[in-house]
Length: 199
Image 1 (cartoon, rainbow, N blue to C red):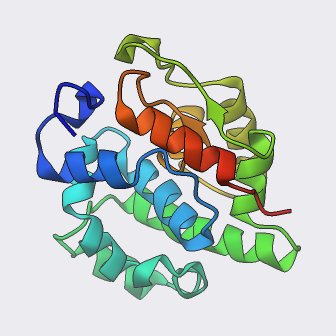
Image 2: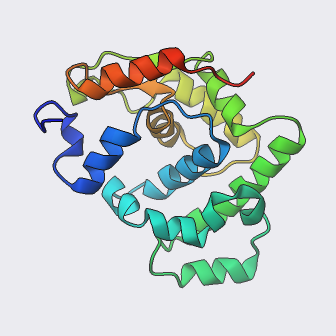
């Protein structure tokens, strides 16, 4: 699509453009994808999203393809390995939070739940479609992100503040925050209408 039509945050960087055009805002019910995105959004805190996108394949390699069952078994040796991995963001707190979140997700599944179910329940089972006309119309947090953040923290998740959670909701299509002039707004809205959240 012409750059002038695309949400301006995508710019012209091929990484951003591909992420904007092919992934951001599409409804997802894939548990592994959702786990990946909640982790990556946590790592992004204080950094540019481009930094995370550039390192995304390295993150996947380092964290066992975001298989939360495998990550939940990581121990002290894995933390040391990851702290020495220049391919990812070497932040002890975020690395340890990823392992903690994997263990929280294992516990959530053991109790009959899922990240997918919690997330979609937070938005009422279908994507929230906003109508932002400029970037300034997009909020950093919402009541839904605050509520889901609180729920996740109660379940043992870390690095899931309301701002991080809102970015996660946007990324995974639980909220459509493409600007109304961007063709992806309508495309994601159509995908949302076809989407059925898991029961």
